[in-house]
Image (cartoon, rainbow, N blue to C red; front, side):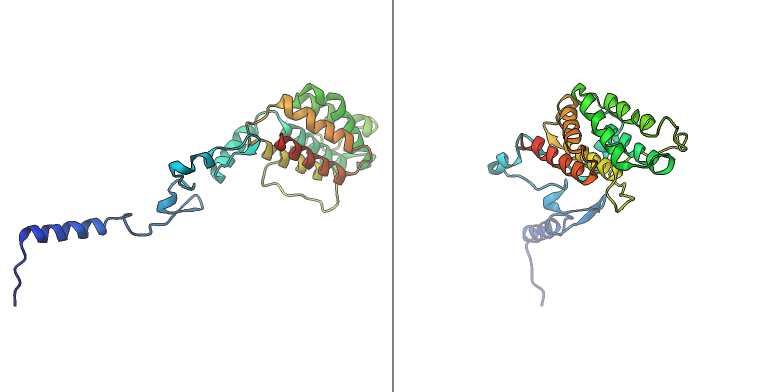
Length: 231
């Protein structure tokens, strides 16, 4: 038995079906972008804010800026080429390798003390390159004027993916702690400049290195970051 359906009613039914079947209208269209799962309510990888929650989007002064992993990587790649705490961390890392593979004395605690003195003497300048040069210059007197046997070797700068090569506390551990602090300082809002950052961390290194204990220096570096982030 045939049922007559008015044309206007049929058109309305077809239109509704088309709307309900439209991609993204009702379907859960999840997809992966750079390893991050994104859904319709989260198309930019960030939580949607209503107008009533606008104040929650404002970052408190001194708190880390919320960035995606891709944004962090791009920022770090750009900042790696600029002088900062990372420059000093790389100088420490270089000294570690010279001491480990090219030293005549091989007294890491003594070298760490000398590095701390260099940090204390030059940190007030706020210039990371000045501090780094002073640290690297400690190797000559530490090594009794004898050159490092790996002076011509290329020492890869630290990055966020570099893992510690030694289980025992060493100058390398200190360099890693400082590099990690630099990564976190970059995310502070507002981001402090070298004139603010370098003296604080150099003072922490100088004060904590008098016993030549890498663990104590690493803890002092972490504490310096916490103090800076709280201000």
